[in-house]
Image 1 (spheres, rainbow, N blue to C red):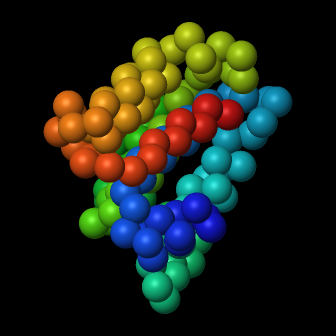
Image 2: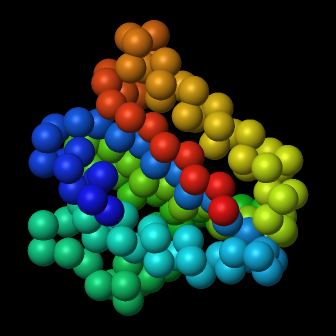
Length: 130
């Protein structure tokens, strides 16, 4: 959350993706839920409660059916994306198409920093797969 607060305060752009799987026994997916809340909370000067964010998710998240769901929080400075897969386990998560697409978005955002992309003109991109 400190990275996001600093980026927002300094006008630096960022793109963060967090990926988890519901059936991961090694790192429970609710850890990603808490990290996502901290990240989103850092974008709002007055903050947002965990329960308020959960209510936002009810209306804003995208259901991917058997693939899980995704939620993206955007600000003028960047975006924070949470992707929760139904299945994946810890080590298998890296082989799923969702992870490959997140990696592609990471490269596209980084390419934007060089002026060849279309989403961000500068900034940092982070991909967290738990």
